[in-house]
Amino acid sequence: MGLGILGNIIIGGLAGWFASMIMKADTGLILNIILGIVGAVLLNIVLAALGIYASDNVVPQLIVGLIGACILIAIGRAVKR
Image (cartoon, rainbow, N blue to C red):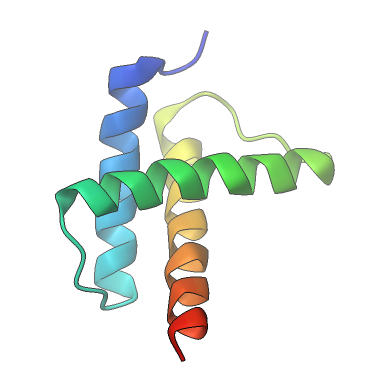
């Protein structure tokens, strides 16, 4: 069934916010949501290609979104240099 659009936005926002705190990035609310959602989607695609599936619960998706957002922040920093 999934988390729904509102659930994905909330989880994405939390994941992006946690990632910005971990990576010490100065991002705003909208960018946190985008980083969390895009990071979760991209990492879910990569994990699915490897045969690993995160369930549709809040905690696994928060972890996947957090890791994905951290990766996106790191890539953004590498591109800026």
